[in-house]
Image (tube, rainbow, N blue to C red; front, side, top):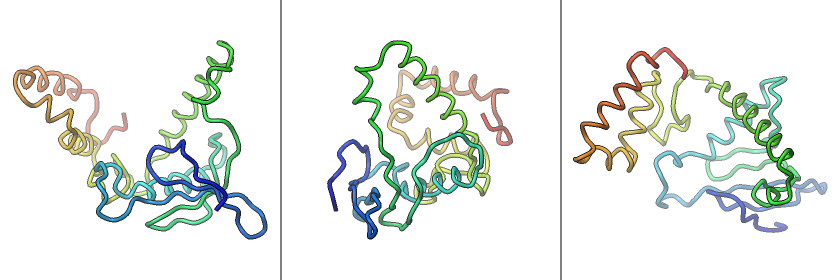
Length: 179
């Protein structure tokens, strides 16, 4: 192990040197029984799946680390050199930041075309319990399990919440539409 990387948001992450001198990054899942949000359950499997999908989509235009090894408890990825946006943004000119934001938007749009191989909607990791065969079902499962949804379902917001949710759903998306 060379060093712990502290810019991550979820896993304990370490920079390591492999036999032969190649640098890699190892992300460790939290221990079993650790308190995590529902969508974080199985998140390393989701990360590995996304890396595989990007690698398997020639011409995607999305730069991604190479998935070296995936396990329930950790993933090993090739190290990608660079500077995190939050560390570099104060040094960017306005035009450079605008260009970077446009590129980020384009990359995000391309990532959103990578549907899970099983065709389900929602969070792909089965342990999250937040995926379904239809968009509306997956979205509803996610919304019902969120603290925001609970807060909005309590009076006095209940009636206005139902109205805004049904307005959003009516004709906008159904179980066969990717929105």
